[in-house]
Length: 280
Image (cartoon, rainbow, N blue to C red; front, top):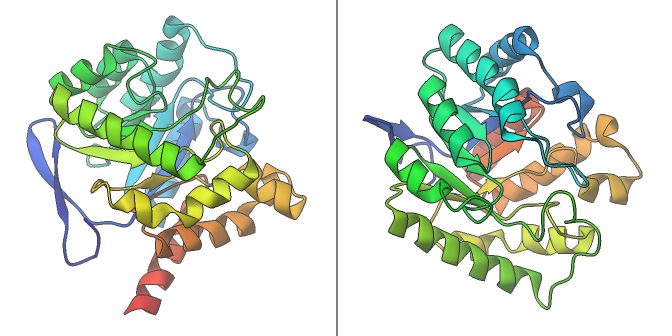
């Protein structure tokens, strides 16, 4: 699944696309309350940021219209559509060759966004928050990211507990991988869900255990960018967490990450290049 000389073929709608891992996913938040203020964009801001990210080497842009930060309230579906669709449409028209992802757990939003130009669905609910999601993605014919989360964004950080966080996340993702394939989704990626119902200790245990998750046989997406697991250790806030993000992204690459989901594309691309140079 990985390596510059061994691209993976993924079905994106009506074509097979060669994907070379590892790659960098840039975050575009069409929300007013994302935890990292600099990532919040309107349509004009999204176009400028998309251009900058693509020029910096992003292989994928992830567009979301409902914040999943800890404590976030659920956004009505009409409001999520109002936020995310104009951004997906505008970015797709301006950059028609760019691979776009929609960050949503709702099947109607996934459908509308893919019809507007998105080519991947990134679901924090792994198909459990909306039972229509897996059948919908199968009909849409795009790759799908299933993420682990304990609870919901509103409750997940209140008191997360596990007997064995690594074993439980591996078991969960194994089951969701099987469910997605059984629903007819050809290409499934897995995300351990750093910060989604986990303490800092849980997060570092999962980072160390990425090789175990690789054994499931699906590409791994990791989202470490500017998160609490950095800030709690360093005494920083999200605006100060770029250096810590780069360190953890480097560790994630060394442990098998295939996609880095980040706010800061240039620095993540540099980490990918330097790790490749180190290996070679």
